[in-house]
Amino acid sequence: MISFSGVSKRYPGGKEVLSGVSFSLAAGELCFVTGQSGAGKSTLLKMIPAIERPTSGSIIVNGQNASALGRRAVPQLRRNLGLVFQDQKLLYDRSVYDNVMLPLEFGDFPAKEAARRARAALDKVGLLGRERATPIQLSGGEQQRLAIARAVVNRPAILIADEPTSNLDATSAASILDIFYSFHQVGVTVLIATHDQALIERYAGRRLLALSAGRVTVSGAGK
Image (cartoon, rainbow, N blue to C red; front, side, top):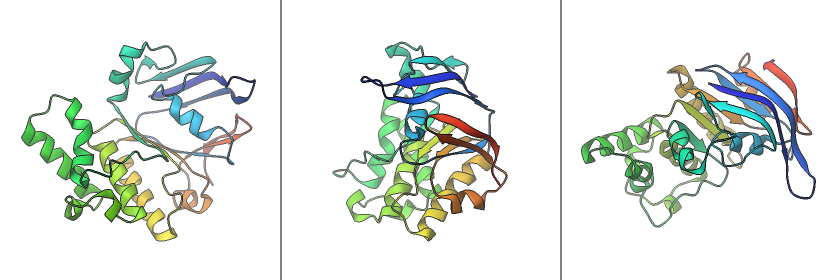
């Protein structure tokens, strides 16, 4: 499903963020990426949808070489990915419902099917009753739930999240992780970058990638 082989990333000026990273995730796995700030977690995640490109090495996602795709092929790659990054890019001048409908506007969905999918996604994250609200009227945890609903409305095979529980209280953070876990349980491949060890320990035994100075220092099950 996802395979990194000898992936390195060096930015202009010589800073190497990732160095020789190799790992593979099978379909349906739940995996946590851990590491201190600056360890390369965000860069690693952004390479999967080809937001960032490696300096060397290859990245295979759903059978496609994401590290070498042409610009026109990238949208097709991303159709099977759900992305939740720290910069949520919510549209504050639109309703909760309209935010979730946005990805469907680029597909060929009939209006009734698009509406059904949007409401199903909102129901999954507990926001169906807030569909007429605007993002500014939501709490931090609710805004994160909205970002998740928008990421999964296309029913992606892979769900990627970068620090989805940062700046949330413990109860809200646990609730957000439970949502991701529910997608994993129905066969979605889930990859989450987090520094919150307490949350990782709630799902002991799940796949764990530990990054340090751009290298994978641990690749296996968490404790």
